[in-house]
Image (cartoon, rainbow, N blue to C red):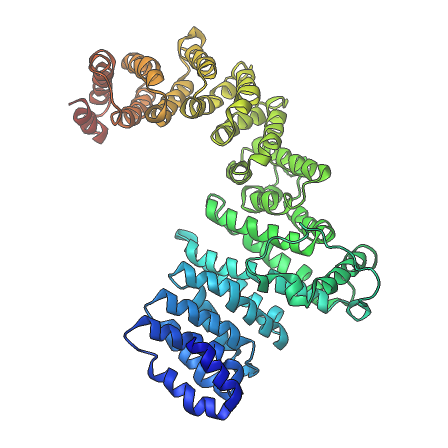
Amino acid sequence: MILTGCVAFARHVGPTRVEAELLPQCWEQINHKYPERRLLVAESCGALAPYLPKEIRSSLVLSMLQQMLMEDKADLVREAVIKSLGIIMGYIDDPDKYQQGFELLLSALGDPSERVVSATHQVFLPAYAAWTTELGNLQSHLIPTLLNKIEKLLREGEHGLDEHKLHMYLSALQSMIPSLFALVLQNAPFSSKVKLHGEVPQIEVTRFPRPMSPLQDVSTIIGSREQLAVLLQLYDYQLEHEGTTGWESLLWVVNQLLPQLIEIVGKINVTSTACVHEFSRFFWRLCRTFGKIFTNTKVKPQFQEILRLSEENIDSSAGNGVLTKATVPIYATGVLTCYIQEEDRKLLVGFLEDVMTLLSLSHAPLDSLKASFVELGANPAYHELLLTVLWYGVVHTSALVRCTAARMFELLVKGVNETLVAQRVVPALITLSSDPEISVRIATIPAFGTIMETVIQRELLERVKMQLASFLEDPQYQDQHSLHTEIIKTFGRVGPNAEPRFRDEFVIPHLHKLALVNNLQIVDSKRLDIATHLFEAYSALSCCFISEDLMVNHFLPGLRCLRTDMEHLSPEHELNINCCKLSK
């Protein structure tokens, strides 16, 4: 009510009296002890902005808001400050204030309160981007500056990346995609041909990603949905038939923005799930906003040029080093998942199969493939597709590729429903567990373990238990050191979370047997290796409830065997001391 009264007064008396009579009231309450008063000040700055002299808007009012954003302790007040800054940005026409606006934007994006950050994305950032576009700074300053800040973060973050800051800059860039696309449309060679008469084409409901706020809706930025519909039709036609000659704003996206983004992606640590996810979402939004023709003709070729997936690159480190980088999961999950028609899905399957083959044959780390599976596996819509990729690996002629397929099943098991595990995963693993190559059989063990940890279907658990039992009890595996270490590691990992009966009747008795056998091992290096893994497994299982009978018959005897190993191998070894503690 107070604000409504102030606005009505301001409308009648004009800018000079508003400045002389109303603003001092605001100024006096800027540090008031009650947050409600300060909230009123923050809201008045926006509400009164249209009725103030323009030089006061960009000096005194902007300074008041800046002070409150930096100093006010109440989230609610800072949120109101952000909304008022959004309104002020619509009225400021002094280009000298651009830098001050940019610094305020960075402060707002880095605010500790989620409410303030959300308001920044919904109101302040779109308003600032609109002003930046008017000034001609969107492509020349705003986006390049944020990109440079991301590059600097990655350079400095080799020993620990500030993921919060990365999220802050990248989410700001993501919020600017609609403004960038609107700029490209408004500066297109066909923009003068737009005529709104006759039947206006329909825009597909799913054509654009859902905007964070109406201010980030491309049709809002352009002016109307009808205007946007006509521009989109001309845009697609131009891209398909006439190309990009003379289209400076789009050429900047193709020749400067995309190459820089792809270069940045190559520097991200592929094992950082958060970073891969953030960049994947960014590329997905960029490709969806700029459309299918743009994605197919401008984005995919730039990634393909870098990834160069062909078998002759297997031994050339230059051609295949990039396959171990974050470029792989971000291309797979951010670009190849944008459109989901049959040919798009085939392209994604083919790409993942090629990556799996090339990484396996060149003995390269599998982190990039794992990151792709983790990101895609989070969405059940891709489970069938990932199983298709893995089946390709299961029947591959190379044992190296079959090994990789076996390892990748472990990642997929946790997210896939039990029906798919029963129908597709277990049969594939059973096939691999009787592979002619022992390395392939060993590679199935972690996946079998993960099934024991996550599945509750009795019949399935029995099948897996039988397979693990054959690995442990079949005489052909008696001297398979690497098979035993893999089983012990898997037992240590899944034992604490597995079904109690499986743990009591299978895991702990078999650990005891393995510990007994290790006492007889004559090669000291192998004996120490197994003992170390046994120690890790026993440490993990010591947290579980173990019945007295099991403790007496298997758990403690197994630990005593382990202590014997440690005393024989290295009396000074710290594991020895820990074994003593554990057995006590």
